[in-house]
Length: 440
Image 1 (tube, one colour):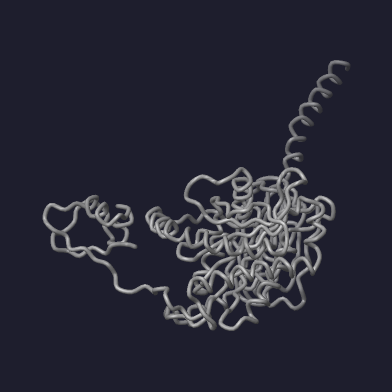
Image 2: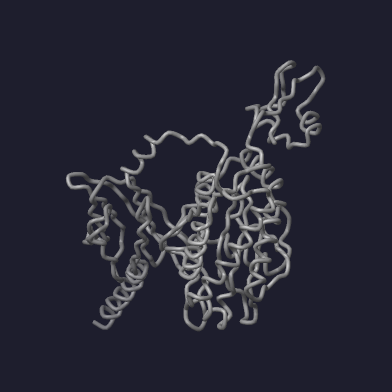
């Protein structure tokens, strides 16, 4: 009898030891957030770890179903806005041993979903982007714009972070960077709008995240004259104070602070809920890098004028334009700068950033610098271009006997890969008598 009880006890211990890890490994959906963007809705689920899931769409009525294996709901789901033109409701239910989430839709959407690894303040996340199909059709019907000589200066204003990415957070008042920089961006847009011959374009005008690559793309689509990205970052310690201005560099950062801030800003896509699967082709990147190199001096000039404008309204952290590898500044043919309006990690500056008066003051300083730069570049009200040249005739080279790609590239001071890309050449052979396009 005692022996039988021992065997029974050992069997129970064995069973418990083998069942506990299964329940411990069960994934939990801990929370859900939703961001309303002009072209899509982004739904983000905080999850306890990697998971297996399936997504499929249904019609009549339109809805999306997400089945998550071996999962349970622990947190709360966001409620759909009753005025939302895309999402009508969000429901949950059980599916076998897992969790089913149903998104009731008001229109057809193109869903895109991906998992994000821990980044910043977040752990594992499941992201679902719902693109409005109506906007897709509308874009197809729009004819591409022809780039002509502009009669106004287009000032593209980029409020950093947004939506899923709060940016830096103040220590005393828990102020979010994304909130204060949007307020400053809106004040700057007001000043630009009032100035004859200037037109503002906002990268984001609400609480949603725009990918770094998408910010540059929007600037180019807008035929931007200049690009200004506005931030209020944090660094270790509480003493750092004042405004600073940054431009792009193809070399190393000019200071530790510049490198720290660039690394911080460049991680925004991982925090903001952007899939990093898409990569630029190598040769296209070569061309972009070449045009950026030529554009950096203009960005430095713009930065110097904006820095002067900021000096007039308060303390500056650096007396010169610093440089670092900020991804958001890599628009190849647009003078681009990043302005750190103040350090949100400094309690005194955090308090000022929260006030309307300081936000207007900073915007005015940036605007003065922009206006002065345009005047120096021979823009006059209404800022018509008097010196700047639009893309004109293309430089070509007729291939002679004995010439090589590397020799031609060396002659014109261009990169070999750029020369091959511009002429759709895959190997090293070139035809005698052919005319090669020389990239600028």
